[in-house]
Length: 109
Image (tube, rainbow, N blue to C red):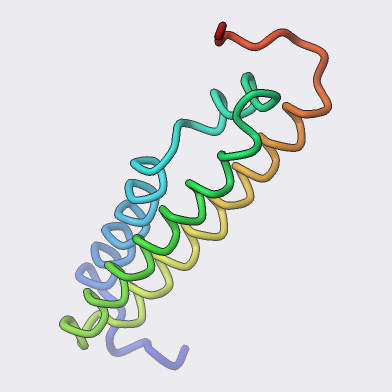
């Protein structure tokens, strides 16, 4: 493994912190995938806009962390990237499933 000497407890913590931060940045910008799916018919026009805003915010913070913590740059970047991909896929699935569903939403306007 090319980064074997750098892998250790700090590497794992940096990876998890980066992944958790990415998830929080995205979640802060929009509701949960479950709520997005349930109410996709009303939220779809803006849902992915806010997911994308959260991704940009998360990428910026992960990049700053990787810049300042060079010893843990790889796990910081990997954790952020992994969570960004997973969370984006969750929201895309929620949007598509919600738009295809005949179930009523929970929001009344």
